[in-house]
Length: 297
Length: 297
Image 1: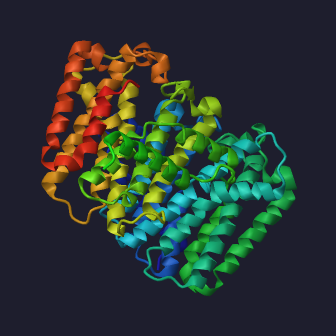
Image 2: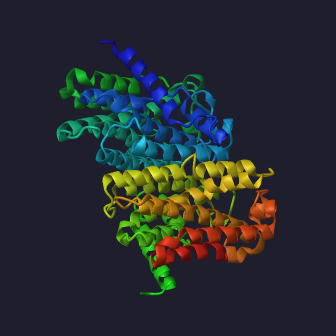
């Protein structure tokens, strides 16, 4: 068997090709909109959520080709949220992965429409893409879960809480609640959508995977906040200290940098514990967790 | 049987109550976002698309309660598109149905998120709302159709074409192409989603209904353009002459006001012809068509 790094790389290549396939061709009418959609999606993202979908599938013995469309749908939702989040009325970010954000490379109106179209496409491919192998009932289950995770009581709700938090003092619990919605919900959905392609799923195993996902979802955000303080703009591919400058509460600003690092380690350990019963089949999930807490951007 | 007007009024009341039911309560966390969603949806809209869903259902003998969620889903997509369309980066409108637009009553970031959340909710309720009666395969068919109608090759694509058209001279064919996407796609979806709640649908009848929908979708837009020239701000509930002032091509600006009125009449006649074989069962569809071309706002 190939080593873990090589296999993650192969999955990254795989999801790039799936995304390329599900997106409308750049020359399709209206071309500027479709080019902007492709610019925003096919930009060298880390693809953490699709990798989680594939890694969960491996832990559960699900063939990769059953997971391509769920993985792509989640990444489309993630990218749409970044495109809207970067808008001047929201976080007003000029850089994303070292390149101009969608509204900078194109214009604000196009960026709004790109986000809208990517969100729509995510649901559409889960419903009807020819590469989708799940049964109708499974697909509906995935659409429902993705809707919950992405909507006003999930990711979009978290963004609303994030905006409302600017300049305010939050407690650690309020900060955690915000992140559970804003980032955690979609990371959980990555694990759950993979599991939903099984006809029947052992409730205990599902709960272990779900707990794993909750821990790394929050760990991801703690590491994000630490990097915002400790990294630099070039490494991050986005403006360092942007959260601090915007008056956004972060883990370091609320509990301090060393407590933040201890929290990160605790969440990582808890995530690893949740996978014990999966043995070697969860090696790539473990690698995803490792990547989440050790990444430098 | 009650008269047509009374029955349309009853359907309007019905969809208000369904929308109220599918929207998260205003006090649900995050409350400001949910209040803004309710403000944007429950604002006395004409509910033309839900009425078309119900009227199509009547023409096909489908019980009303099978149509409530498809009707609500389409209206949520319509309202999300208005909220985003009104944003400063798009049409920059301050008034909608005589009240401040969402970004004026709340703020721009909230309006972006409101649109995102309404679009997500539309797909979510089609997938899993307890009042949804259609089979899994029918629901997927509806989600696919709504995605097509709303996405980059449907409504959002039409909005991109609309933005690109500002200050340009379009041919009548280009203008028509823009409207078929921007407004026509979702009006067609209203008729098609109703039809998809049947297990089997006669292809010829489906084609007649589809043709009806295409005609009134375009007629709606022609009338919109005429009203933009001939009505006044108070009656319209939005700024009169806004399209003209924004340098947007309209039917009157391209083919003149009297040719626009003749076109409107032709489309209306064609829509009526498409319904001939339906007899009395299509009386409320006819009333919807009449309303489309005779409305004053």
